[in-house]
Image (cartoon, rainbow, N blue to C red; front, side):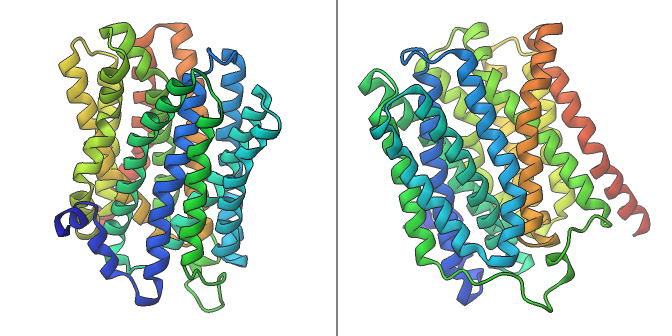
Amino acid sequence: MNNIRSLFSMAVLRKCYAHKRRDAEAAIAAAFFSTFGVGAFTFALSLGAHSSGVSAAWLGLAFSAYFFARLVLAPVAGYAADFIGARPLLLGASGVGAAVPFLYLLYPSVETLGVIQICLGFCSGIIKPVSMGLLGDCVPESSRGRLFGAYNTFMYSALVLSPLAGGAAVEMQGRIGELSLICPILGMFFSFISFARGRMGGGVVRGEKDTALGLPWREPLFAALLLAVLGRTAGASVVITFMPRLISESFGLEGMQAGLLFALPSLVLIAITPVTGKWADQLDRSGLTFLGMGICAACLFGYGQVSSIWTLGLLAACMGLGSALSLPASMSLAADMGRGRVMGIFLGVSNLGFVLGPVLAGFAAEAGGMPDVFELTALFSGLCLLPVFLVMSRKLHVS
């Protein structure tokens, strides 16, 4: 049991402030439950679209609206959490998320599925930035890397399990239906229970550090970090959109084999994040962010050149390594700069990357082919990293 607890980085909860430990437990548990529920539904919606009579154009519109909802809500929710507190926002979002899938029982139609998808996007746009801002307040700055490592471990565990649950629901029913709604209902319900157990105090009080009351635009690393996150998530969105197609068209893999290869970066991340989370507390966080995101951009470029299944698997594993290096470090950097509103802007820019990535990739696909999709996005991600490199060089020169 101790080994399992250590594997999932939960020993870091002992580093939390005593009165904040339940809040940290609630944020980490909700990261798993909400990600699992929403991920299972979105996967089922994509997988069962054809058998349920959903057109490709309608499906694309539903997913665009989902990401746009998250894009809009993340900064707003972050600002609101600093003034009215995290508790009403988190309980309200998870409660609505658990209730809205029941609409399908009253109005069983394709349009209702789209409404549910968009509503879940709004709920996720509130839960993720507010819970991350809450998490950053639960430990001293010296332990934030390990705590965000635990957060990412649980979240990516859910991303591995949710496609299996969503696929099983569609396979059992033969289409998107009532079974596909069980996961988001349960995921959001257990998130609600987790938040209800937490204490979660009120908003910002006078006398806290200045970064809690405004965005640190004068700090060069803040803008550089936002641009780097934009490039990383643009690359991630292209992998999510086009990687299954690459696996199927280039190597003829389908079913569980394709799913396992697609999930390989997440599996690697889960395995090594307990270690990289500690590194984020011991080493330079901006350096780890640059290194990890640089590895991801290089692997993304390699996807466009890959010629064998073994090379693709190696690149996928390396991408998991890059994500494990950069995620705890970049989240800790954002938490060091402020509370809810900083996390809201951080995740808002992240969601903007998910909106822009497929657009950039679509242009590349029209102009060239599948290799160009990955190569152009990799170059974009690499260019977005240059400001972080310049900030690091300036700090080194001053030292």
